[in-house]
Length: 200
Image (spheres, rainbow, N blue to C red):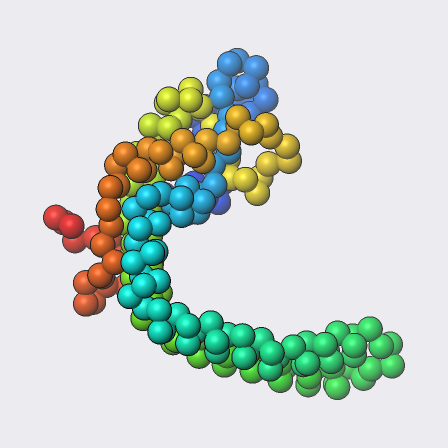
């Protein structure tokens, strides 16, 4: 399912690959846009899980936010200095490279630190999200059938669309009908991307 979701999000789901999108519209076949992340985030089950996680892990989330803000404050002068050096034609390449490399090293260290701080609430969030994401494919097919849509595209691929061309709320509605609740307690050895054990 994860592969299917990535494929859907990255490209298009095409009913008739022999016809270009314009020809499908002309033939009366619908084209629609779907934002998968928004559809999942807007489900009642995921919202309830997020609320529970925010309550249960409030100290860890507060610590993460405080540390994240402190790191941003720490790195801001280095960012400004690099931008100033980049704008100055007299800046030696070696000087700029040294500053950029130092900044990248510190940013990577900070990212790793934040990743560790986010782990306590990140795993439950990912677990809850994946339980909803596993139902996206059948829910999307149902939403497409209800709206008589034969082609779905990622929002990033759209230049212009009318509001009626977005079936993200329809996908959310289908997911709400399918996924009533999700667990926020992953199994001990669970990692993001793993399939759920049978019976969960």
